[in-house]
Structures are given as structure tokens and as C-alpha cells.
Image 1 (tube, rainbow, N blue to C red):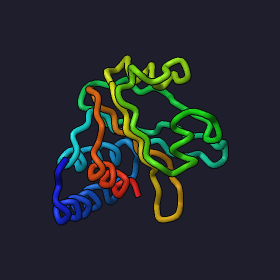
Image 2 (cartoon, rainbow, N blue to C red):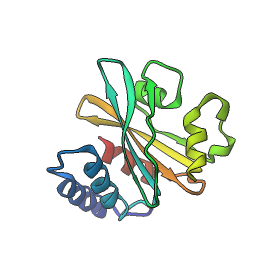
Image 3 (cartoon, rainbow, N blue to C red):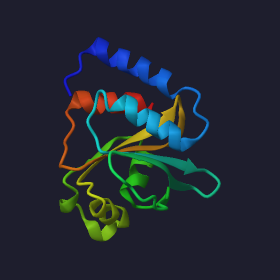
Image 4 (cartoon, rainbow, N blue to C red):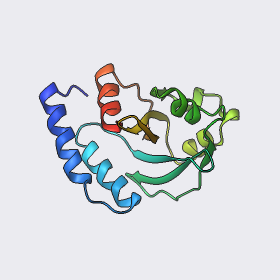
Length: 158
């Protein structure tokens, strides 16, 4: 990634300006993806929000560089799934390459591989102290973010 510190703050400011005022999650996700792609190269951005009534994590929006058929994905927030772990622990998770992950334990990994995603970086999404969900970045090739890139993605998601 290699973005100098002042450029990161400018990118965060520009990003906050570009996403302000969106009333639906689809356009918000697309605007967020557009702003982030200037700094981080990824193929899919997924917005997964927590439903406190049912204690579930639900995929609400996807922004992709290529055609993507929306699929309903709902995970128990108290489950053993890797997304639930990110939600509970509020720590990022990098899965790369997905082919080496235990695919038998996750339909999500199988679905990701079917649409050409070979790496995932998941960061907890929050608003101050309030947990909102997960921001997921999908990559068409194996991807291991360096510490600076991961810190930037975490800052964006907070």
C-alpha cells in the first residue's frame, strides 16, 4: 500500500465526504468502495451488519469490480464462524489463500471461491464504542496486507 501518513488522513477525509448523505446501504457501499479503491486495490467490498434483535450478522450490500449475484448470507453472531469471531473479538482477520482454509466449515468460503474471491480481509465495523458489523474486502488473488494497510482498513471501519 505504502501511503504516507498525511495521505492517509486526506484519503479518510475525502472518503467521509464521499459517503455522507447516502440513504440506502447499496449506494453507501458503492461510494465507500469507490473512495477506498484509490488507496487499496480490492475486488469486492461487503457490508455485513449486526441484527441485535436476532443476534445475527447479515450481508446487506456488496460492491464488486465484476458482476455479482446477490446472495442472502446470515450468520449467528454467537456462532463459531470466522465472521462471528471478528464480531466478538473486534479484531481483523485475514484469510489468504481461501483454498487453504477449512472450506468444510464454511459455506461462505465455498461461495466466495465460486465468484472468484481467493482472499478475504475482515475488519470490525464500529461507530465509536458501538459495534455495527463487519467490513469485508475480497481479493481475486491471495492477499496479505502489511501492517500499514491493515491499520488503514481498521481506521476506515471505525
